[in-house]
Image (cartoon, rainbow, N blue to C red; front, side):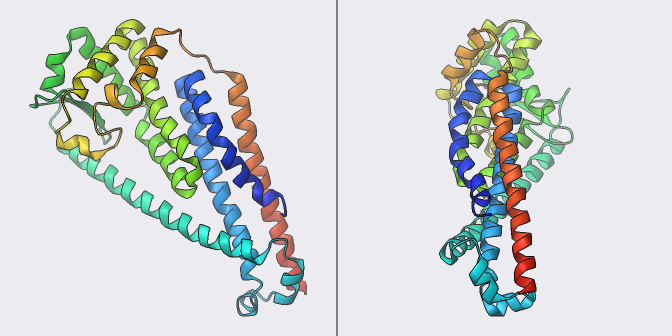
Length: 311
């Protein structure tokens, strides 16, 4: 436990370094899955590590050790962590639990609001057209979800570009991109060091939707032009649509405004990315190391509790 308990914390420092390469060199769908898994696993592992360290501090106090029939004297002698480290871990654990709970409550409330709004919207084939001169389009998850497009956006795009827009927004719904965003944000709430992973996912889901639109239309260059055109239109006309404030996939046009547009356009003009097995293998190695080290630290704590109980 002296080393294993700190491994997830160390990996959390290193993981953000891989966020940019994964998002820019790996196929978007795979990149999204890898980033989401990384945020969840590392966020969970670091929370458990903090909990393990905090417990080693608690059993040093006779009043608390007595609750578990442990020997505080033996714990003070055999405890692998300094008391100051355990106390800091306890404080960080409390902050982590509060931030994660707050994030879950806000996200659940937002998704519930989105589902209710989507259910109340009259739609034709899942499409809702609203009267608004501001070019805007977004996807609202629900049962079923809705793609909302303003008349301003429809007037900005030609017929082929409208098909691209709808293919992009529907990809957000069919692939449940809001869930990937929520899960990575949960991991980042548990461990703020993982925020670059959550930021990268907001980009990779847009790239994922871009690629789906390119497959649906068979014209990557046309999709790239549509992304740029919609971006310019949205830039000159701030979104005023109430539904956009839900913030499920972005406050403005997800097709145009979520994620750095020049990077998305450049990726569409280049050949499709591959799965990049080296990056995937490196990510898997980090996650396995985090899981194994956490399990090892938990086993060491179990042995410690057995020994102090015997003492």
